[in-house]
Image 1 (cartoon, rainbow, N blue to C red):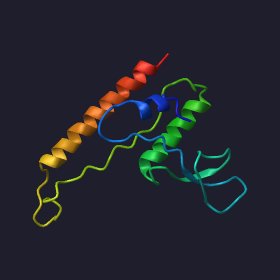
Image 2: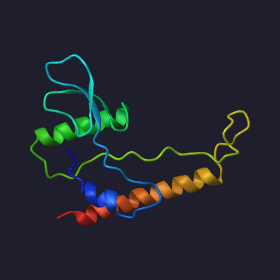
Image 3: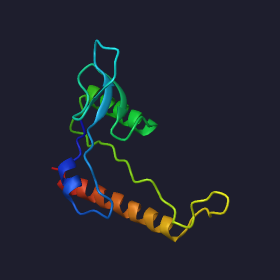
Image 4: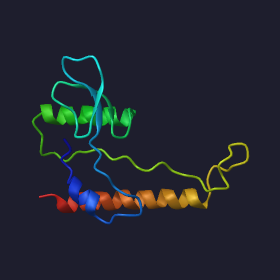
Length: 129
């Protein structure tokens, strides 16, 4: 489990992108060979196949870091996992043959995401005991 203050992070007005506490996981339960999707996180002894954000490498890294933290007895060490929105190009910059590397909408989205992540970190630190 995360040790971040997820309620504060999801409820705080940190920016224009919504913040969700997505605990859904696809796992293979212990003693089974079939994957199941559970809305409220993994069960003990299961093998994770995908998290709420998919089956990306970042999820695997978060799972391993959490497991290491817990096995070292550091359950109070702040830790969690955050997916940022996918950066979008402007409406006129979607064709790879004619589009640019960046555009004003892309730059605005990137700046807003960076600002919001900073605000989420401030919120998490402010909620720490």
